[in-house]
Length: 403
Image (tube, rainbow, N blue to C red; front, top):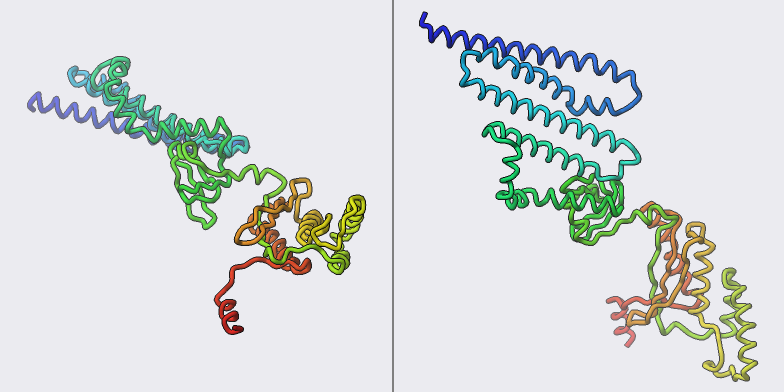
């Protein structure tokens, strides 16, 4: 046989044997790790070992063993091909580097799952930091691989990286902005996983599902999911309802408009009728004494309506509403309760209700507010007040028919 052909066959056989040995070692390592380690972890009550298993750390470790073996076998297999040996060693070294990077990335995934399962870290942007760690890990791996290929020191490559810094900043712009934003969001306690947020610019209104390096996922109340850039929560305005959810009440702030022509001074007949209303009876008796004392003291002729002090139906109505809110079991009386007049306009005189519902859950809160304003609208007529509303087509037709 030709010596050169025999040499080639010998080299191919040795390469095949080395690959078969590496494959066998990988299978044995894979089997051993996946059979023995789960038995050990099943005896523990901790979750960190389960997270390691579920994120492929064992698979990466199983790949590392044959990679190290091939690195040791290469000088033996290619003993007579000294010129090829550096190339083979470079390939095996690069494979080991990326296997190690994969192990680190898998560990970071495991750490992410472990911390997210911990109540103390569940609302923190852990994914942002783990994703940044994986980016840096693979960046280091790429730099080491390039240094191996060109047989240059990694420090030499890093010294010349300034030439491509602008390109790298452009490529990783979103990642850099997202990381800075994640740090700001976490440091300033601006948003957590599980918070109810409203971001008008992105039409997002719902709960935060996930905070990543570049995006934040918000599940809207219609069950759609909006993906928002992380840095948008720093650059743009948004509303976080966490304060309301953690407080003892949810704010009610709404006004009803009273028709101004229905506002008048109370006549004696009106006052006697209002005294039958339990929530204002004591107030009317007390105010009557105060008003009579004032008018007598100043010798005012009260037969003229505008002389002296008098009760008005709108004033009594405001007192009634305030006492009604204080007596309601659904209103938190430890927080602000206020019934106030706003500036009159073409839509009448707004009477604003400002209070806090004890119930924060959205559906129940809306029912509390609906019941409250149902009563307010229905009770206005008891004080001879009319709720303002713009005339409808039927109103205009009726006016035309009357004339």
